[in-house]
Amino acid sequence: MLSKNQLGFLYMFLSICAFSIMDVIVKWSVDYPIGQVLFFRGFFGIVFYFFVIPRDRFHNFYVTKRAGLHFLRCFSGLIALVAIFIALRSLPLATVVSISFAAPIFTTIFSIFLLHEKVGMYRWLAVIIGFIGILVITEPGISSLNIYYIFPIIFCLGLSYVAIAIRQLSTTEPVWLISFYFSLSITLLSFLTIPYGWVMPDFKDFLILSMIGIFGGVANLWLGQSYKYSEVSLVTPLKYLALLFAIIFGYFIWDEIPTIKTLFGALLVIVSTMIIFRREIYNKKLITSKTVND
Image 1: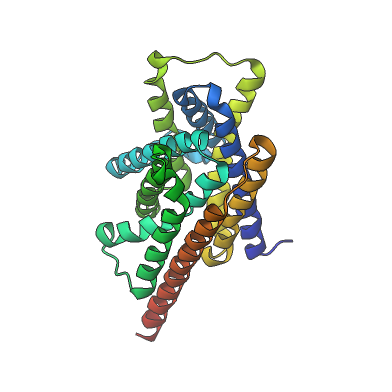
Image 2: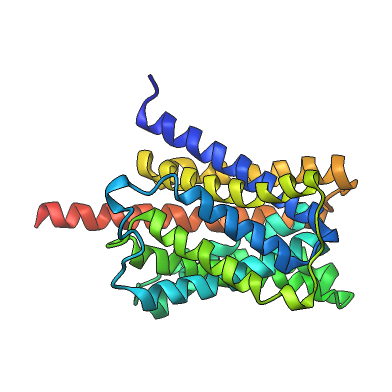
């Protein structure tokens, strides 16, 4: 029988594997329009979540009193999703994953303005280190005017607000409802792209494309389960396995070899996010200690 922390580690590992496979399929799907790939991500994500909705909520599972915040979460999530899809198709896999690690840096900045949180010296230092890491990674792209390097950064910005919105929504909304509305919004957006041309996939490609939604759905669920069973500080370092998977997949499938600058920049970004996570854990313990003493 696994302990709670062991279960948390297992779910985080499975989540990373699922997200990594989804990224590989998205990069592989370059022959299909992005709008069509979005459809498979959204529609099959919806199908998956119908299996996790509690039976007593089937008659009114869609009811929410926070429609406005759901809209903002979906809108920012769509921006992030489209940006990362474009980036995955246009840049080396390891580069995209490395830059995507910077999302907590932008979340820290947004939390100042949206949640009115106080950010101390250590987290500001982490933000600066993280931005230096991003500059190290993207310098070749900026110098050669490769516009595609901006899309992983847009993804980080969108995902950062998503993290803020989910933090607010999760106080009253179940995880599956938040994810359901996002998958629904992806599907609706994809329909708007039909006039720009879709390609009829054969049966094999249809199955592969459907895996984008299924892996995306289970990955989000496993991620939530990981945080449920274990402390964030314990399982978060496992996220950086995604870079190892990206390097392996990129090398064996697309002959991509990450540059020294990419790896060094990724290291700076990882150090930055680890500082941020550690300070958040420290601040929570400090607040809890003060509450107990009072």
